[in-house]
Image 1 (cartoon, rainbow, N blue to C red):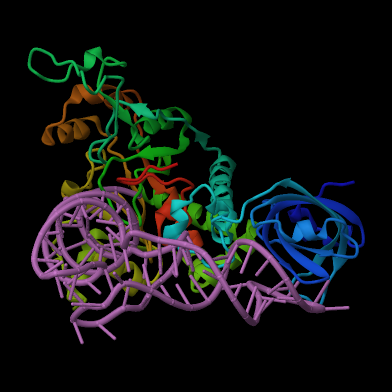
Image 2: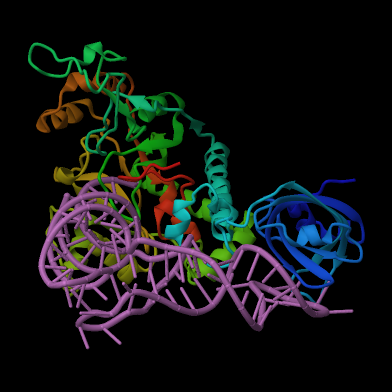
Length: 464
RNA sequence: UCCUCAAUAGCUCAGCUGGUAGAGCAUGCGGCUGUUAACCGCAGGGUCGUAGGUUCGAGUCCUACUUGAGGAGCCA
């Protein structure tokens, strides 16, 4: 007998109607009465459940089935029957129900709403709930969409190192990687930690960004992207920060900041469309139960051009807004969250690129503009989530880059290979970093980054 | 790291100005000819986050700590 997935059933229902098939999955709930019972069965392949009907008269183990606790894994044989009047389009009249793995009555997932906080404490079971089933299927699809988007455009996927000596200057605190015995760390004659005795013979950490390495491959393949885990040891306690997250970092050669923004906008629209087209049930669920404005917002993103504004213009708008901001609006200081929110949520009500920030608040590798005060940087701000992308045109002029490294008191030797890229046929080039989880939050309407990562790592929390 | 709030049954919460704990859901048992967050009846279930303190008496007041949430900083 054919073993059918619930996805197949829903997608090609007509092929199975009035046929006897076999399905297997996990019991979400069971309701029973004297003569008949109903099982909500989910087999993992599809967001929706299939309803299994079982009757005392026709099922030999009726009593036993009634007592299956939620969560039990079962195998069902039965006939597919159309039910046009009912809530669900069809159901399965069971002729045989076998237990594969029994659950227990203390199964933590009840037939009721659970708080996301509680579900985080059972992160190993939460993918069995509607919300997390939807989140993580969408996460998977969007990851695929990102590869698809870049591969269709001839980008080369580069695996930049996870363990690295490059700390990308200011991108964030690193987790250090060492095989030292923490109770017995060797020191040199200056009483400094002697990293020459460590595993790699130097100080190493987990990557905070693959960008610098990405640039090297960009200078060979022209268009590249990275997509991998990123680690930041920042003591950030917000709904938008995690210590381990995934980042997408494309880098394009012979390209300037405008090309960079075009790419970013095209990519965001592409992945949103991909989710809407390939996970309609999940997206409908988000729109109904997580964020009632979701479709409205996403439609607005997909169908409108993103706004563009320079940092200086943004300061101007904020100053003239008449809003009573908690933090003063001063040219030269970074935009505060309240400022960013005002611009993207109140002024434009859609994604906004803010460009050309003062050089002193941005990283050393960003290209100096002709005004000598600002750099060719861009942040993409979106309503609700805030900064979802940060990018820039990179400084390709060797003398400018060296001068900047000196100004900031950094050591040129540490960047020898990065400077080489400018020495040996450097071109203008640009790139950006997309916070993958922030994109998932934006697409699903989930408001906490801990709920879009299977087993999230945040300060004081690395369970599972 | 800072500010604010929270922690009571498996879950979600109530518990007033201090007088030794309650509901709904879940679970168990029973009932119900088709339910769909099923319904009806009965039952079991709590050293009130931890450690101190004030008090005749603390879930309730005070202190510290832990964990969580929201906001801020940092960023993606």
